[in-house]
Structure formats: C-alpha cells, structure tokens
Length: 150
Length: 150
DNA sequence: TATTGTTATACTCTATAACTATA
DNA sequence: TATAGTTATAGAGTATAACAATA
Image (cartoon, rainbow over all chains, first blue to last red):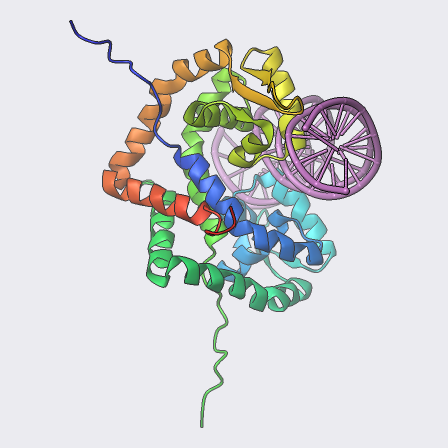
C-alpha cells in the first residue's frame, strides 16, 4: 500500500518575499533619513540612479528605477520645478530627453552622502564585506536580462 | 604634491536598488500569473505567507508581509468576503484574531502552485540550485532583526 | 508605421492620526 | 495605561489606454 504523496504540501520559501523583506530592512534607516528631505523613496531612487549612472533618457531611467514611464513623467515634472533634475532635449532626435542631476539634486545627494554611506557601512560590518559584495553580485546577476536578448 | 582624494566621487552601488531590481525581475512572471486571479500582488503575498507559516495574528501578519496594519485590515475584510481567508477570534484575548486560509484561498494557491513552482524552478536552473539556496539564506539573515532585540 | 514621452483615469496602497475594545 | 485592531483621510504610486510629436 503506497501512501499518497501529497503529505504536508508546504511550499518552498518564497524568493520574492525574501527580497522584499531584506529590502524593507535595508530601507528602514534610509526612510528615516528621507523624512528630512521631503523626498519620496521613488524620487530619491531617481537621484541615486542618475548619480550612479549619469544622464539618461526617460525610458532607460524608468527601467533603471523600476518605475513606469507615466509615473516617472510626473515625478520628473515636479523634480524639474524643484531644480532636482534638468532635462535636455536631444538634438538629433527631438522626441528624446536626457535627464541629468541639477543643482538642488546634486546638493541633496551631497548633504546625505555621509549618512547614506554610514548606513551602508554599518550593514557591511554586520554582514561582512565579502558577503555583501557577493550578495550584490548575485542580485545583479539575478536582475540581468538573459544573455542574447540585448 | 598629493592629489586631492575626492577624485570622481562615484558612490557605491546601491543595495536597496539592487534588491528592488532583482525582485522586479523575479516578480515579472508572477505578476503575469496574477492577472488571471484578480488578486493584487499584496493579497497574493498574504496568501503565500499564510501558506508558508500557518495561521497568524494580524500584527504578525503585517510584519511578515511588509504591509501596514491599516492596509492589511482592509485587504483582509475584502479577502474574508471572498472566502480567501477566515479570522478566528482568540478565546483568551478578544482583541486578537487568528487569520488563516479559507477554502477559496487554499484553492487559489493550489491552482497556481504548479505554475508558481515552475517559475521558481526555471530561475533555479538559470541561477544554480546551491546559489539560489545561498541567496535565500543571505536574504533571510539580512532581514533578521539583530540578535538580542527579541 | 513605430517610437518617445505625455495626459487621463481609476484604482490601490501608503502613511499618519484618531478611535474602539479589550486587557 | 497599554495593546490589537479599526476607521478616516490625504496623498502618492500603479496600471492601462489613448494621445501628441517626431522619426
């Protein structure tokens, strides 16, 4: 007599949820920091990506920040008013705009760079330098589109 | 003559953004799957956590799903109407409710278990079994509250 | 005809505070 | 007095489609 295979039927631990929880933990002190700035987490992300990767077109920026283009459009309008970013129309294709950091955005990043790096350093100490790098490598690989698609 | 140390001023790659991008990549096929169910990502998360960890009180469930208690309250009300979950008042403390899967929720999970597991298996193949486990371990450790606080 | 970015709209979740009931 | 959960409310982001301008 063979037992029915469906015994307890507990599923594997969830990678998306693990990623979310890890992110919430890491973001907690950053969120606290952002209270002073009046910036949403998303706008801060826009600044960070521009700082990391330099000027980008909006479609690319949307991908890089994990924001939808319509959401990004409105954020950029507000951020442009606040001199956080500036947009330069591309000469040879006037549909496109190159988004870059503007004075207030650069200032915002500079003012919070020390705190932001301290938060990360604290985490690195808790988690280990090598493992932190390893984790970042794995996450980047996980997010990379499968080779051959670009 | 010593060069000024602030050379290019490029910041370290961002762990929160890396976590977000990885999550978006992993979630993409799940989101597609959820289109059929009519469930939001958050409600799906509630079901998955209950499936993974069994019945829980609402405050614990809010923590586990990374949702705020007021958001969770309204989601649970709708999910209760739809028989996705049920709530049992705790006998010895009538402020508390134990949330558990109900018939429709169990059915929903069962109907999508195969697809959900296939998505994860595909990822595991691309990424390697061991490294996937390792990644999950690291993420859980990262999300763990520092020892001594509980 | 396809692509870049915008506008419109409905909806959901976030976030905070104030509240109820139980302990 | 403190805690579990609810309600209220404002606001921001999500998601989809339709649109304008340009290529």
